[in-house]
Image (cartoon, rainbow, N blue to C red; front, side, top):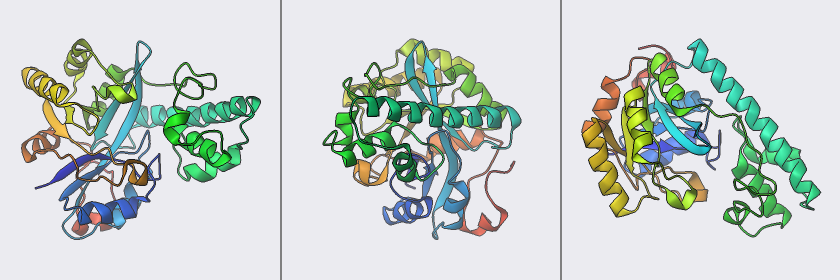
Length: 292
C-alpha cells in the first residue's frame, strides 16, 4: 500500500485543482493520499467527488503556526471541520492571510514592483492566498526571475523589506484544537533547513506531550542524517514516523508519491482520530468531513 500524506492543490499554493491532484495521485500509483492545503479544507469536496477507483482520500490541512517567532507547520487529519473553536481559528487565519498579502503588495509597489492585488487574487484562485502567489506575480512583473528569488531578504522572506507578519497559532494550541475536533496531528518537515524549518528536539518533545501523533520524517527536503535522527526521536516519543511528497504540482515538479508513509504509521493515525473518516469512491455520495 502506497500512502502520501501531504500535498497541496490550487485551493492554497499548489498549481493543480483538487480533482486533478486526485487523478495524478492514482496515476502515480498511490492507494491513499491526504489533501493538506494551507489553513483550508476548501478542496475536500471537489477531491472526494473526483476520486478514481482504488484511491482513498484522507481529509487534511496544513496549519501555519509560530513558536517563539519560528514558523512551525502542523498537518491535521480526519478532524470535524464544523467544530466551532477550530472553525473560528481557521477563519481568523484565512482572513489575516488576505490582510497580509494586500499589505505586501502595497509595500512592493512602493519599491517599484508593478503588481496589483487583483492579479495576486487571480493567481491564488482559492481562499488561502499566500506569499507564493505574491511571488508568482513578482515573476510576471519582471521584478525577479524565479519564485525562489522572491523569497529572500531583498523581498518577502522573513526580515525582508516587503515582508509582513501574520496571525499564527501556537503549535501546542493547534494540536489541542485538532484533537478537540476529533483529528490527529503530525509535525510537518521539521528539518527542512533549506526552507527555514529547523526545530529543536525540545519543541518536538513538547508537542508530543500536547498530543502530537506523528512526525514527518521522510520529506524531500530532509537530509539522510536528519531522517535517521527524527526516526529515532519519533520512536523514543511513541510517535508515528510518516513520509510525504509535499507536492505543490508544477512548483515542485509534480512529485506525488516520491516519499510515502508505511501502512503501520497510517493505521496509527487512523486509530487516533474520531472526527472524520477516509473517503473512498463508494462513500463520496455521503460527503466528506462529517463526524465518524
